[in-house]
Image 1 (cartoon, rainbow, N blue to C red):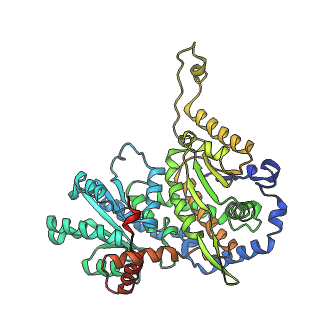
Image 2 (cartoon, rainbow, N blue to C red):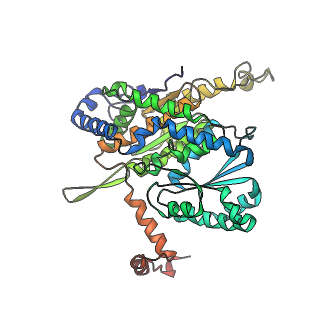
Image 3 (cartoon, rainbow, N blue to C red):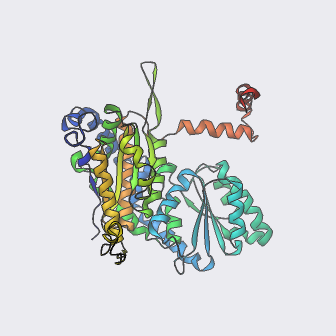
Length: 462
């Protein structure tokens, strides 16, 4: 039976890092009404299934359909390319990094490429480096009109049509909204194989939907086990006692340390290269969900911690100096792995060199754990609050647990902050301005607005 992940928040206690930097039970008890309100809102979400991310761990029929399709096409292709950005890309990357081998393609499974940007040099390099005849493209956009994704799609469609004519459609899969949007309409007109994102699931909460599950299944990840891990965490997080609920406690600690202790930056630092892109995925989840403006008595209140990703032990040599001796405005979350699937013993050598030979007889895993422990101790000594999420191992089940815990924690934190964690109005304005700059019909007023404000003074361009 798969083991549970653990959330150790000892080093966030006021008794450990001081009253100004850590939390106490009194801090939490003083929030009882606010916490109860957030619990009630999460329970309403569960009951109504809206927003729908709470239902995704139970979507086994969808997983079975995806597995059957993945099995039917694997033998025909060497490459699987995702065309998507933000929530349509980061989860795919995180799953692939965590659960596949980075240096070799698993025999019998395509290699995954995720085109999560519109950098023309990188996109051109991909097209020059892969065999289009052996490649299938998954176009992912819920709205059906994401400019970055659809520009890539138009390029790919044109190239494939020139090669195959009508048969080009065999190389295109669409993942989009089930009811509306231009990609849905195009997929129906053209006859693409299509998977659907539930209407009430936003992009940054969609990794456990076909958005993330399809590329995972194609590349050999056990998506049923991934969902089983998420279901395990969902069941576990029905516990109303927040001291026994890792998602709730994670959110409560972030709220206290942000609002009451002035820790305005949330640093996630996995001690595993395989988990580095989980931190990247989390960065969008936390920032886009919680960075909001509230209007209180006619005044604007700006909320939301700034999420930062780091990687142990790499960033011990680039960021930890700042973390230990710089401004004490951060809350650190480490992600550790109890047991690595592989380890390497460090051989003996240079016995006369005491600064080297002490490593002999140990393993790289032991050294990795020691470096993680040393970093947490250094931060704790410096009165910097930190916690650790422990994975028993890196597996589909443990990754499913972790992803769902962070999604639920984000929603809970949003309710503590009294904002809507599921919208993103700040992102929408940038999209509209892009449409105006690119000449999309219907955005003429935005174009006129740009012309009024976009008047750089050459005096200040040197």
